[in-house]
Length: 413
Image (cartoon, rainbow, N blue to C red; front, side, top):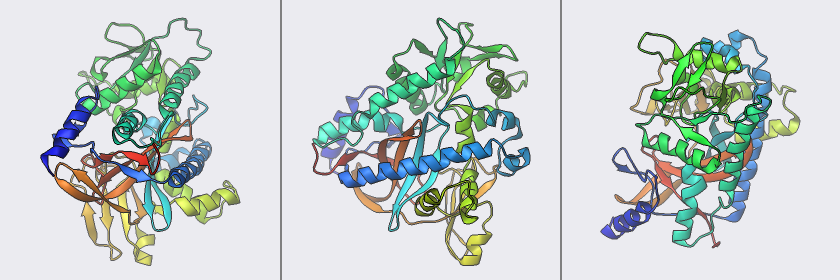
């Protein structure tokens, strides 16, 4: 790519405060634009609302199943009672669907209901890029909806507690730029009297409470980027299971946690195997219309690879819990491995097997010149309703080195 692209990109993103245009020493945010027709944007929102409805509805069922079922799905035993809590009306405040545009319409490959990132990019930065390129932003006015969702989720969690000045703390790993700045963005956007405290500065007393770096008891912990499956493995220097203690505080009503416990219930990719199983059975839990939605937008997903080997279909093997394509493998119809992510940090989780579908390939500008990559649509749900959307482009497996490709509306300005 000519130096002009690099210079324009550097100038533009250099003007956006507290944004990670580069990650891991590589270009992340592209100085380019993927244009969508208004009708396509509307359709993605329709698909997102329907898919979100299917996911959120299954939570009611999952809270009632025996412990053995949850364990078979790969939920850690330490989380079983936590999973059954219903602390908020919406199952997840901020969640993100990953949709693939295929020749057979949009297909949902997963939901990140517990700790989705890609938030500031789509709700804030995308509008700046659209202004730069003089095109209409499909996410216009979505930032205000995000602000209201964050505020209302905190207020809902505090309802009935009678606190005059609640201690609201947003937290993340202080050494991870993307996580830290995402959380700070949400905190500032909320407009609430809150503070940021890095994870390592939080102090916990078993059965009593969680405390900030000043020793003040925390009433609300907003941990947008810290997954529950990582939390439960947290121990202090004395070997105390402080992560499990934190979940116990939530169960005891001593702490409000956002995203709520039900978001972790949905985070498990085995939930898609449950949904597909109910669909195959034509189970009355879902209405006829809902079964049509599952058929249209979900992919066959199982807890074993046998169905794909028998039908000689390509499939994806992924851990029930995982991030950024880590430990994901793609298999050919012959059953032979075709692609595998080099990161292997989630091998200890139950595996989920999902039908492989080919995603749309698009060309884009980058500092390495014109490239072609597979398109992944990130579509956010706020309290279960479609919100901001945007694109990642990368290889067969979307990982933490995939690019953020800003999106605009074709013909709009």
